[in-house]
Amino acid sequence: MTHTYNISGMTCANCEAKIKSALLTLPDVTSAEVSRETNTATISMSKHIALSELQKVIGEKGNYKITAEHHSEAAEQTKSWFATYKPILLIFAYITVIASAASFHNGTIHTMHFMQIFMAGFFLTFSFFKLLDLKGFAESYAMYDVIAKRIPVWGYIYAFTELALGIAYLTNFNPLVTNATTFIVMTVSIIGVLQSVLNKKKIQCACLGAVFNLPMSTVTIIEDALMIAMSATMLLLI
Image 1 (cartoon, rainbow, N blue to C red):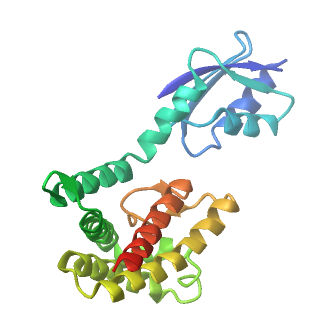
Image 2: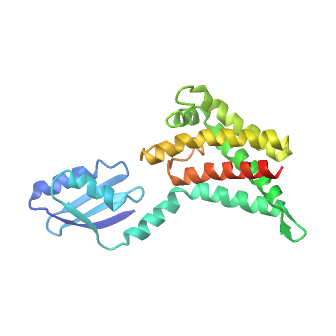
Image 3: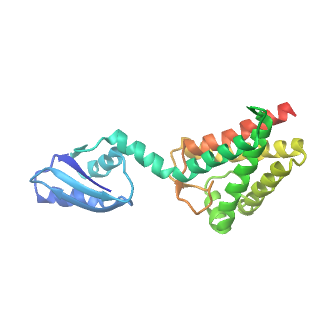
């Protein structure tokens, strides 16, 4: 995508060069053209970059200010958010539809059966993507998980733990053990996620393995919290 921005504060050709070089330091910027005559910067990027990020890099070079010209920054950020998280949103939608259909009996959706099928679909799907590149997942997971940081082999074990939990939910194996294990594993997992998000660390989320480059965010917290809430609910209703 390519956007044109207004730039204020440029006074000479050197300003053009400084702003262009600053913009090109951003990983997602593929090209940048800066003009002092029109006070604009035309930036091509592989994915939308927030205006605040652009302002930060050019602000370090001088008293420059960048503003959006012909596009809505809010709309672009929303569009970028959906584009970034499209894989995980589609997976959740897919699993929800399947779980709803499988638990629909006599004109109503049976809550316990829905949660059981949803959890089975969740763990089987997410473990599948992790196992596609097990080493890549383990390395990414060790960057933020509290256990994997200290015991790297836990990343490998975790992927197979998810697979085992998926099979356990699918076959209705010992609900007490299955839900208790899920509650413990996901509670420990969310600790590292919360630390990373609260500390605003820009690292890759390993929830879909190393296949998709998903940034760590509140989406990851919601994902883990949902599994914790469902397992706790099922424990109480057993």
